[in-house]
Amino acid sequence: MLKFNLHSRFHVPLKIAGVYLVAAILWILYSDDLLLLWTQDPEQVQSVQTAKGLLGATVITVGLFFLMKREMALSAATTGHLRKNRQELLDILDAMPVGIVLTDGTAIEYMNINFSERFGYGLDEIPTREQWFLLAYPDPVYRRDLVGAWFEEVDGARKNRMPIPAVETMITCKDGKVRQAIVNTQIINDQIVIIYTDITERELMRNELIKIQKLESIGVLAGGIAHDFNNILTGIMGSITHARTLMVPEHDATQPLMAAEKATKRAAELTRQLLTFASGGEPVKKIVAVQPLVEEAVTLMLRGTNVRGEIQVDGDVQAIEADEGQLTQVLHNVIINAVQAMESGGILRVRIENHRLDTNVPDLPNGDYVQITVTDEGDGIPPEILERVFEPYFTTKELGSGLGLASAYSIMTRHDGQIRIESAVSGGTVCTLLLPATELPLSLPPASLTKTHHVRQEERQYPILVMDDEAIIRDMTTTMLKYLGYEVHACEDGETAVQLYKEALAEGTRYGAVLMDLTVPGGLGGLETSRRILALDQDACLVVSSGYSHDPIMADCRAYGFAGVLPKPYTMADLDQTLTSVMTTRTAF
Image 1: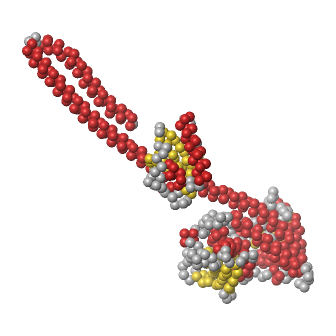
Image 2: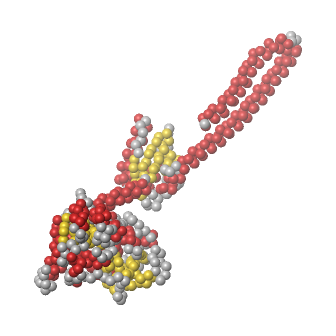
Image 3: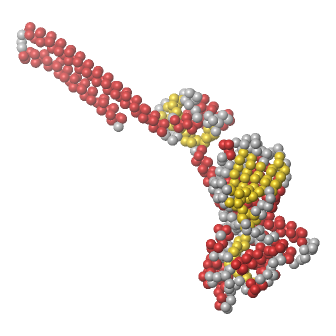
């Protein structure tokens, strides 16, 4: 459009000038002949020629005047139009979402707004290309390699008219931050146009996506490990607890077996923590006491450090309903952060107390809570960092993942609780955990549970069906159930379990309970098996068991038709308690 308008503006004056020129030539060539045709009187001819000369001069002068006036107006309009178009072009460059620099090869003549906003420099601060290189690439080795290669490409492009390839660079901004950018260079006549595309946020998102993909991979791996490892631990733990019941308490092997059982439980907790870290999931809650969990976590996490722990328990602390593995993970994350804050050593103070909420606290209803307060003597956390401590992947540690406190926050939220962190620079940090208290009684310890298997003998007249694809678990569970006084049938997959249940119903009886594994590779698992059995007998007493402790079915088994849940690994006491509980609370046969 601009080209067409300018062409029209120059074309019209040329036409007018051409008309004037033709008229002048015709006047000069034929005016005397016309005059002689009009008169032959010499005096009249001289007078008319004099008047003709004056008239010609006047016409030419007037014509030149109007032509000059029009040309000046056209020149002013054209200049204004060019100025307007230049400003529009600059506005377009300023609106571009990339940084743009124009240089003649030495001086920087222009930079757009995006460039100044991204990197913080104004034109007065980097008047030359060399000054920009010094500020943007302060590392001399990096600057030498990068700038040297760029000059070679520019020289080659000028000689061979070949495009200059884009290069990815790390640019140091005025505030000291480093941004990642792709630099494209174009040569237009004698001008060099450099375009900076900031990809810092894109690369951060890409890195976060890679982290998420890694976590998903870890989650799949952790699930497989949890299932297989917990199956092995179930066999070990069940055999140990069974062995303990076969000997008198005074036997020399009692203490080693108890130590082995405790170590097996620790191994199971580590598996649960790995699964929680990798894939989260709903907590599998039970009634637990807070003090033993805190004491064990403090002892474990302070072992081998120069930090001393002090635990204060105020009064008779209420129990809570929680997933022990997930809550232990929260305590570990909080304590390890406190220990890392006290590089020169110090005292880690932990206080456990009942707490009543009678005022509105964000995201928490009023009621009874158990409060755990962890106080360190570290340097404290600056305010700008404190407000971001629960953000996933945010970390100030070189080797940190930024997932510790983020996962702790998620776990506390799923427990209907809260985690708060308060800190002042050089004043230490206080982390407060609030968990809803419960009036429900604590589960009896395993040592007591093993003595309860003779109660309610009338419930043991019905056989128990065990479905598990692992032979070692089937054999161990069968042995423990027989010791507890049950008749037991066992099978390795869901199809066989459904068939056995059909046969039992056809014979006019039923199973007292069906203990089934949730996951059967290549076969019918617990969920589909439960649906088929419930279709045969809506009063069937089904118990789900799995090493995938964070499966939604394990968290809310009743929503899927199960009467109870038995996480792997389990002891004989766990098995006895679960069966006794579901069989005494179900409707009468």
